[in-house]
Image 1 (cartoon, rainbow, N blue to C red):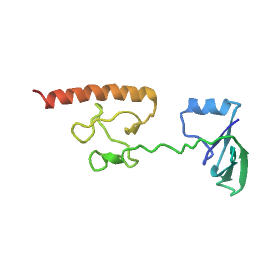
Image 2 (tube, rainbow, N blue to C red; image 1 turned 180 degrees about the vertical axis):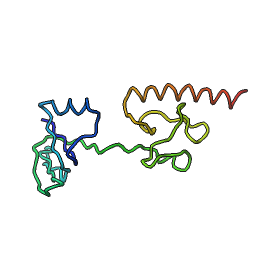
Image 3 (cartoon, rainbow, N blue to C red; image 1 turned 45 degrees about the vertical axis):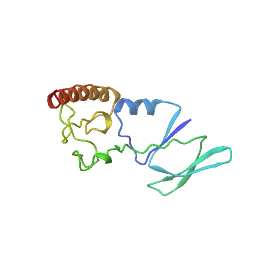
Image 4 (cartoon, one colour; image 1 turned 45 degrees about the horizontal axis):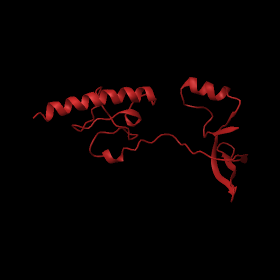
Length: 142
């Protein structure tokens, strides 16, 4: 059994992904809850203590491992003050993946956009590569 401990009472993932998770008999969602403590012994993880955020009640899930995933924070701190970022630290670009800093292009999930998918990241990368090549040709001709 795979448990997904979720702090709210609904998912925000794309509908098709929600439907797949909710219909999978080997996945159990633990709603309105947060992990409190990973428990175990010298042999490994044995359980996960969770707290229901609405009731304050604690429960324990028998597990053999824990994978922690809490949202998505882009690793863009290195660009702060160099290129424009949105309020969530995603990089703002134009349609050619150019940032506000000349010669810096961004692609993929660190870019401010509606979807975070491999397909869009690959497309972003292709556009950024072509735009960067053109930038170099236009600005560093010999």
